[in-house]
Image (tube, rainbow, N blue to C red):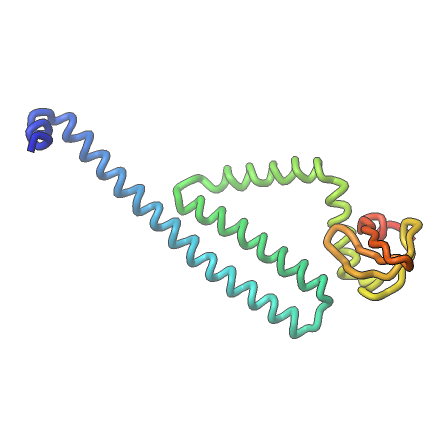
Length: 174
């Protein structure tokens, strides 16, 4: 009752409270819209991931390729979803995309050795110079390939030692 008397006597305060309520309801709808975009996006990503897994399984791809392609598709779609949610919140996504691109360049320069291993891993997975179970010699080491990972190849030597050989050195060497 006292609040109504104060509001009736002060039109500026009444206008401020009405503006606050209007902006609050607008913000609430914006947040609800962003949540809907996120939930629907997660559902679509889940369906696309299942589809990719099903296609890779039908085509009988190497297990390392399945894992790599599946995680690459998932990360790419999640980044797109995050950009969509940020756009639904009203943030200009063009500047966000430019910031993301420049951060990618900076991270790429900082991790150039790691990116060489990544590129080497892609070459090893798609060109198949060797497969899991093959006996190889690389970087002065010899052994049986146990795993082909994104950045390295795991080799078990004849004396049962596990060695991690960077994929960039394998893809660039003889």
